[in-house]
Image (cartoon, rainbow, N blue to C red):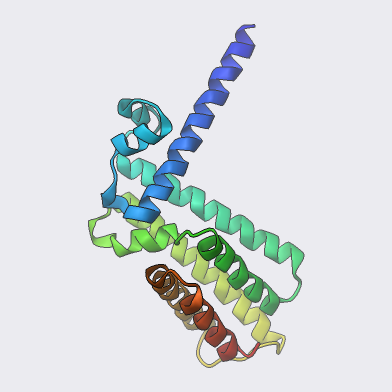
Length: 200
């Protein structure tokens, strides 16, 4: 009985933590890091604001945990693409499609893209987490670019690292334009040009 009670408490704590993260992520994606408080989260989750401090002592701890969770989801996507698709250029194409589905069809914007716009006012630990996310994304893209070019499936001028940085910048900018216009057209146009540049 004691073990059952302890397990229930553990499960409830994990569920509460996940709900806090879910609400916080949506609020950041809608309002930015500086546009919400613990009270906003508490009101939606249905708990007292001080309870959030039990899970995340500070707002920066919460945001850093969010970025880590977000990075894990994207890393899992890249791993799944690597397992499912043997050709690197097709992995890139499917990565673009997955990004479109996640960001546009589900009406989200990139969590780290939103946070990057507030980099000057972010706590150091959050800014470092965001930087790690983009650095990891650039490295993954560069690896796919190098592999695809080595196999003769695509071609491009410049280094794979520079092209990867260009792709990340273009995607992030087009996501913001799509959000502003409430249309997927800017993102779709950007991906079309990236694909044309790479030759697929």
